Image (cartoon, rainbow, N blue to C red; front, side):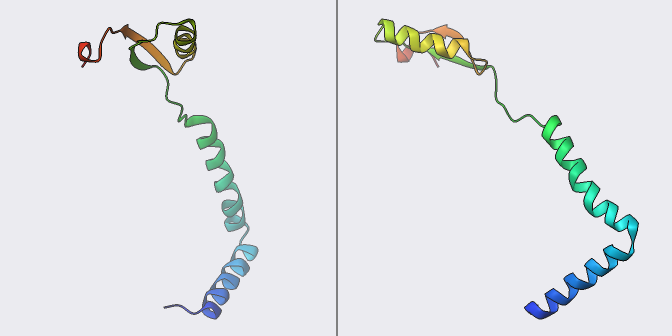
Length: 89
């Protein structure tokens, strides 16, 4: 197992090397920034357009309003309305 003193010495050596070499300094600073920009704009983890079936036993104004909020969002697509649990598989 590496001792803390040895780890600190290696970290100091690497900082001295990066300080002396301009290209290493640019890479050490620019590469993380580039990756943050690429992944921040290119990667989208939002889940949208999930197909769902609705089983509304209550059939009140409140339940219809609740279902309409699902259909108004971009996250869910109501594909069908079912009359019983056994009706949909």
